[in-house]
Structures are given as structure tokens and as C-alpha cells.
Length: 371
Ligand SMILES: *Cc1c(COP(=O)(O)O)cnc(C)c1O
Image 1 (spheres, helix red, strand yellow):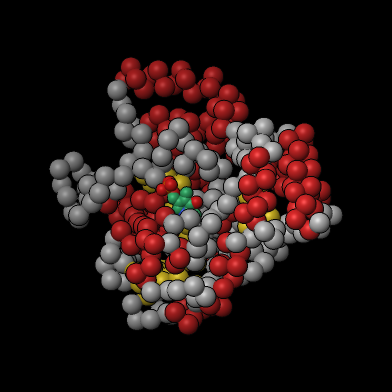
Image 2 (cartoon, helix red, strand yellow):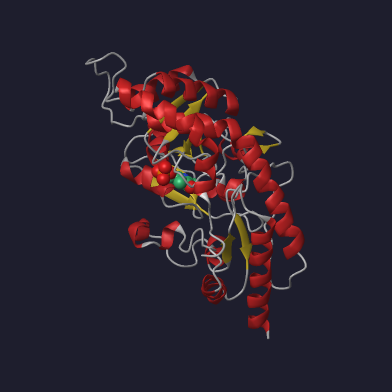
């Protein structure tokens, strides 16, 4: 691709001098899992988000499951989540034997629609998972109103929104607990799979830490059935180095997003993304909407523009979740959007020249369709 979707090499280049000597130390010490680098990152990330506890785990999907288990979700319980999300949000729920209950998203931001929630609440609803999709904070503050007094926990999926803020506070600090992913392509990414659970609640934090470590906080004393989901020191070193740059990188994404919007708002046939009032978006993805999206995407690829789709199939229309029994037409907003959305190249090192290439190609290709 002439303009790649993402440029992770540029991130690595910025941090290599800090990371590589520490990686050598880890090799020499053989302290691979947990240890001082992991503990340091947990403290730094908790402080950054503004929560009391951060438990670093193996990936973002485990983080969702661990947070849900800690708030008391068990098999057969129902967990409400948006139809428009990465499939892992539903996967974490299904893997623990709980039932994903989907709701539609709002047409302006494609985030969970709180007004759709009351209709799906039952006696088995134990939690709701708002997803801060594409880098902007979902309307978490509107959820307590619709689930009031029913003992339903809020577990935020913050995988795409490290550093995002809203009028209500920082994404990841708004619910009973939150999960995040440090998959390399996220705004804050490790050198492989990694994730974390965050919470203000010391009891939840202790349950997560134990569950993620074979159900144990004291070696060979097992209080609960656990799993193995821990962070490796090599990832913590990378994460600490990148966390120090995250505000600057998110700022660069915001500048690039503003520039895309300025340039594309004058292009007929391209709908630029909208940000909820009061939100400080971190632009994990810059998602426009166009007619005839598959043709536009194919033509962009022909011209070397690394555009992508997040996500081509809403959760309920994947084969994996057909058994939930939702058919086409169940979530019209998510379904319509899935045929129109197009993610443009977006990362902190995106140059103005590359943005101009993307905009020129997109304008021309959309124009070809209208002609
Ligand atoms: C990436 C992602 C996940 C899963 O994280 P992994 O680290 O890949 O397991 C979950 N939810 C959302 C919204 C994501 O973007």
C-alpha cells in the first residue's frame, strides 16, 4: 500500500532506545511474567485513567470476561451489548456461558443506544457492556437511568478508547469496572497480545487478580476456579514507553481527524464522522460513510490506499452468533451502517501528504460512482 492503514514501525522507532536495553535485562533476569515492570505499568496506567486499580492481563477479551466474572456474571446470565462492536465483546460473554443480548446503536455515532436498553432487560440481566467504539466515549452516564435499582453492573469495553474523555469523565473510569486491550494496533499497543481490567473497587480488583492467576493470590492456595491471564514483562516495558507518548499521539490523531473532516466535508457523497457533544475523541478509527462502499473500498485498494471496514458484519449476522436467533432486520441502524462504513488510514504518524492522497483518491472514486 502507498498509504498504509497503520504505521506501527514508526511507533517502535520512537521507543526502541528505551525498550531494548530493558528487554535485555528481562532476558538476563528471566523474570518474564509479572514482576516490577508489570507492577510499574499497572500503577502508571491506573493513574493515567484515574482509577485505583489496574490488573494487567493477557488480552482484551480475557479482560472483558474477568471484569464480568468479578461483578458476578455466571453462566446463563444475560449481558447487554451493542450489535455494532468487534466480535470479541460478544465472544467474552459467550465463552463464560452467559448470553449476549444485543441492542442497536444510535445513527449519529454508532454507539450503544441507551433508549434501546430497557426493552431487553429481564430478571437474568446481570451486566451491560457499553463499547467506546472507534475512540469515542459511549453514553455511559445515561445507562444508570435505564437500569436503575436492578443490580445490573456496567462494564465498559475501552479497547478502542485509551485516553478518551467525555463530559462524564475518562473512558474506563465510568462504570463498575472496565476492560481494555493493548493489541498492537490499538491506540496503546503492546508487542503482542495484552489487556487490562480497571476498577475503583478494591474487592473487584482482588477477585480479578486472583481469577486471572489460577484463582490464587497466595501461591498454591486456590480460592476460586481461575484461568491463566497475566501480562509479560516484555509487554509492560513497551506499554510504559508508549504510555508516556500517548497524549501526544492522541493529539496527533485529533489533528489528523480535524484535517480529514475539513477536507472531506466539501466532498459530496462522503459523510464524515460525528463526535458526541462534550467528547474528546481519540480517533482509534476515522470512519466515513459512503454509498456503494464495496466498490469504493476495492478502488481505494487498487490505488494503494489502505482503507478497511470495522466491521463488515454486525455480531448478530455472523454465523457464530446465528444461534442467538436475531435475523436480518433486528438492528436496522447497525445493519445499514455496516454496508456504508469505511475506515480511512489513521495513526499518529500520518503525514499531511498521505492524508491528501487519501482525500484525493476518495473524492475521485466517489465521484466516479456519481457520474
Ligand atoms: C480489540 C478489541 C477487543 C478484544 O481485544 P483482544 O486484545 O484482541 O482480545 C474487544 N473489544 C473491542 C471493541 C476491541 O476493539
